Image (tube, rainbow, N blue to C red; front, side, top):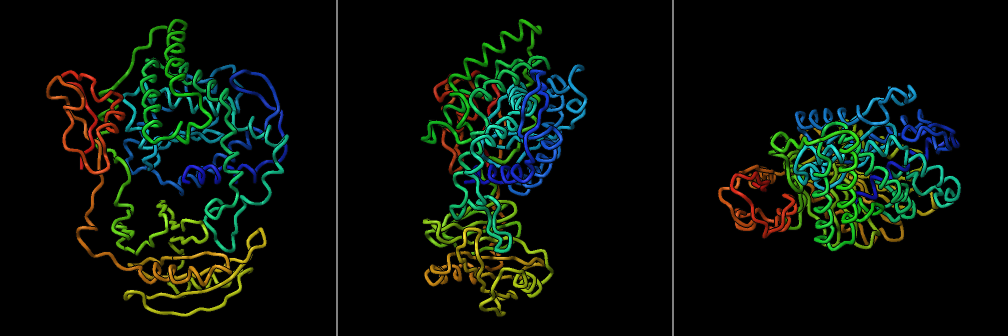
Length: 494
């Protein structure tokens, strides 16, 4: 759902900016062709969507790591088609931004106009700087070849009718994204068909070329693609979600080696791996979910940093994001959204929300929730599809912040879900339990192997939720692989 939501956000921004087709240059081929947007529009799209991506996922809080990834990205970019002397000026002068997202998902992606993202989950699964160079080169390749703009043009030719108004959201009601209430599912599915397998193969070729030109042994990336295949097999899926349009990882593993050999013959020997430097940069990175930003345990959601908790109903799934916490009912007939209000008091926040055009207020009042000042509002509004949605919304003051807990369901279903929504909202309370407040994440430790032995035999006691196979995949080895004494190992540590 997280992946679908990111693509839905990006696509919503794309739709808003499309103003017809544009004849423009492909910086990789040098040829002119029809695109969905001009290059200037692509830059605006990327800039607007970047703000939403950062709000959705949050940036990983490690300035040194962020600077390192950006610095390497700029080095690889310097060897791309976008920085060559015969490339038109508008491409050569486009600034690029490389960001590390605070997500445990193994993922990397790019937005049009020069925005490239890697997750901390991806960084933990890479074994050296050469592998990261190929990944960044691959994403730069998507931007340079203007793949998103190509797909947008093709979409405009035959699929615009599928979009309708589903992705535009319901601003008055404040619904947290159409896909949560089964709105815009077709759009979410269509969105990442925008990169075809041929696009991915081209970006693989470009990523290897750019990395080799920068002096890196791009063949190192083959081992990472082997790990991706193992990750997908471990999850029980044919491919990780972010690889749904990519060539098979096994195919890519072989292709990467061939491409690296070919480019080293043309450009010259490229041998840089920089494992020690890379490991020094990622040591201490958070692995898995960071409980300090909120976690579910024993039927409740706890947020140690903001010092609150609330009960989680048995049939609701929790989706924790930097800007909001979603509780989605199993049948997706009700959703509860926790956010921070911008107003300075619960009364002010309730008054501002209830005064919006398009809402019909049915009830309102004030009370204390576990000793905290609170104001509630019950209101109805119409979705873009003409359905009547009833909203129960509590505004609660806690430690200088105003929290909004908004429960949404169709008006006809409200009586059924009202007790469950109230259970959550009236269960919101200050968090004072030291054991819950002081919880710490699992982090990455780099340790040399103390003896020559199979990898399995070198593993210490692992934190909960970390299996030997998962740690082997993270190290790009098999459990029975013989590891030589002194070899640096990546190990989870609490």
